[in-house]
Picture 1 (tube, rainbow, N blue to C red):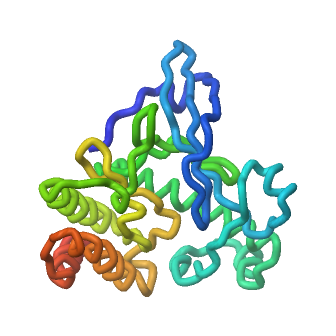
Picture 2 (picture 1 turned 30 degrees about the horizontal axis):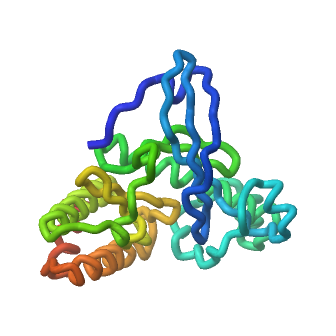
Length: 252
């Protein structure tokens, strides 16, 4: 179960110190920051800054505090079921105007925060979303002062730990699908291994299983993708049986 978090983490006056970039992916840059509470207590947080889709020059990127622009483009299928209420906003998105692209950028950020909040409240092992504003999501850092938790793909696991990790993945997927979501891009690269447990990360593309016409297809792809890694590490499971079990969790 995710740990509880003191109220000063969110509400009290704080100072923050940047400690460097942890990872820069196709859609976001992750930096580590140290947050200091009013009483002197400290903790590490992960700051996820979404990469701009329309800014490309080096000077503009440096001014925004990121290393490059976003390489993520094919997001239409993920966005199905996420509606903009205002007609003007829908038209701007359909026409992909500058305003429309900004709306999409904001929606991705807010969407991940909302999904993380729902899943954390449901008891899933995901980073606690502390806050978000503009293009920045601040969330729980998984790891220690001397290093972040490794991605599952890079962790050196014993056969017993692989079996434990698979158990955690199945249980985590049950919790996520019971909450009505499919991760949408699950692999051993967006699972973390920390202190003998698996954590799920990276939810901007998460899809509502009921609202998105391709929701079940995304869920099935999540299962087959992540199981492929486990099969290569000695786990023998039928993806269709796992998928059926998750359907029971989602609709049973």
